[in-house]
Image 1 (cartoon, rainbow over the protein chains, first blue to last red):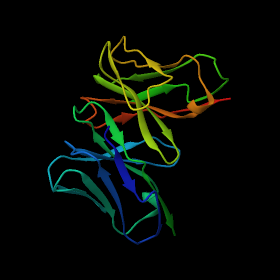
Image 2 (tube, rainbow over the protein chains, first blue to last red; image 1 turned 60 degrees about the vertical axis):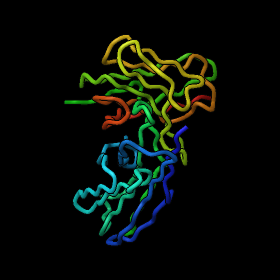
Image 3 (cartoon, each protein chain N blue to C red; image 1 turned 90 degrees about the horizontal axis):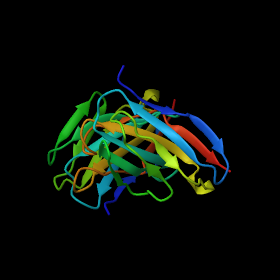
Image 4 (cartoon, rainbow over the protein chains, first blue to last red; image 1 turned 30 degrees about the horizontal axis):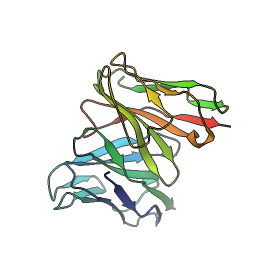
Length: 111
Length: 113
C-alpha cells in the first residue's frame, strides 16, 4: 500500500531561525494536505495542494508540491514560539478514500 | 459551532472488556474515519465510512469494529481490547472522502491494562 514518509522526525529550532520539513510518498498523489497538532491537541488542517509544482503561502509558512506530485515541503521562516507542535503531511490513496499520514515532524523552539 | 465530538475523552479499561468510543459530527459530512496515534508512527487510519451503512478498512483495522447507522455518528468498537490497543484515538469527518480537508475530534486517550 501507499506509504507517506516525513523527515525529520524532530526539529529543534532557535527562535527566529528558518526550517523545512519534507514529505515523500511512494505513489503519485492527487493532492497533499498539511496539518498541525499543538501539544495536547488534535490535528488541524492547514492547507491542501493539488497542482504539480504548486506553491502556497500562509504568512511565514510556505508549502510546495513537487513536480511529480510525490513529494512536498513545508518551510517556516522566522520561527516563533507559536509554531511549536507536530506537523503532518497526508496523501489520499489511489481512489481518494483512504488517507495516509506521515509520522510527523515535532517542532520545539528555543527562545 | 461546527465540530466533531468524541466520548469518552479518557478511558482506562482491562483486557477483554468490550468498549465503545462514540463520535458525532454536526456538519452533515458523508465521510468519517477513525485514526490511532502512536509515538513515531503518526496517524494511522483504522476504518472509514463513505456514507450511512458503507464502511471499509483502513491500514490497521484488526481488533476494531465500526458501524454507521446514522450520518452524524460513527462509533468505534473494541470487542476484546488488548494492551497493544493502548493509544490516542481520533475521529475525523470530511465533506468528501479522504482527499478533502479532515475535521478532527478532540481525541480519546485509551489505556488497556
